[in-house]
Length: 439
Ligand code: UGA
Image (tube, rainbow, N blue to C red; front, side, top):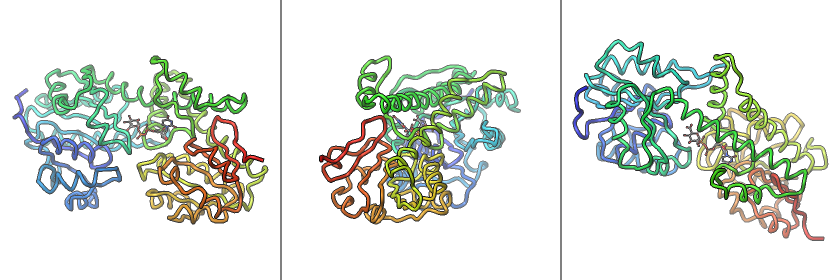
């Protein structure tokens, strides 16, 4: 393999979430970056210095790095790939109807990259792909002077720029150690432990991390239900458990379970991989069921708070995105919760600081309002589904005064129950005792 020039360009294929964040952040580290994107709208956005996805801080960064020419949109693979030392594949791997990952975009991108690559180029896959995929792609490769490695990404939506600059670890897997080292060197100045391994292990590190974290959340949510039954407080239980470094305090926030574009997809894909090998990943099956159950349980709690019947009731839903800091509605708990409430005859009015437009096509019978005070006006109950700071810091005295009912159900344990009770509100949350107004 030829040695690349020190700051040779990096080509990023795909300007979705992973691609545009990686492209802008690498460019900010003074790497010339070219982005290849098939979608004309996305290309146009980057050309105008704008981000293709909503992510705090990203628009400013894309504007900066496109302005000074460090990031540019390539006309296509034939323009973007030649001359690049590393070609990062960051295209989607959406779930198929069977739950496994659809690899068609990855296969196409790799084939085209191989076709246009200079001798010595390394192709680094950042898309999440099932174990064995990189090795299979390497076997099928028609050229021996191009290497392929797996470099999973661990960015969280809403915190992606921070996560990029403060990685806990960097994983690069492949057969060619020199190719692995070259990809690792792109991110070396960011710190974090570097793990160079075989590509299948790298693929499984990614799936294993997401599946473990999802299971951890489901575990604390099951504990929350037990707390409700026994009168304990899940926040205290989680704090006490998390102090043990073997348990760790992260991802022990009880709530409405995991959603988004990653955990649900990756958990199912990992389960599907197990199935192909003739086995069942029982723990993951349970986590998936527990996660669905958590949403049903929350709806039951809302119904209970309204005296056992939600029909004709005005329910204000605060928060639609699967978590704060994003407009991503994929597998958002809000969708299941609102649909179940609709099915039981409730009138739902929903609000979200940024996700209303992405939510609209998924929730066609829901009324959306931009202002949370408008959402709670005349509401029988206000329900917090996403812990946006806008809702945590709402003027709750004003909100309560606008409501018809005096019940708030907090699916994220993010509000001050004692304060709400002092405003005359009955406050229900997850895994904690209800708080009633003083007599
Ligand atoms: C997740 C991983 O955290 C990233 O490391 C990974 O790179 C990414 O998937 C991916 O595979 O691309 P993300 O989907 O952005 O990131 O969201 P998280 O912050 O991990 O949250 C996932 C879900 O779990 C959210 O619905 C969140 O509300 C929920 N959650 C999280 C809890 O209910 N409790 C917690 O304690 C933590």
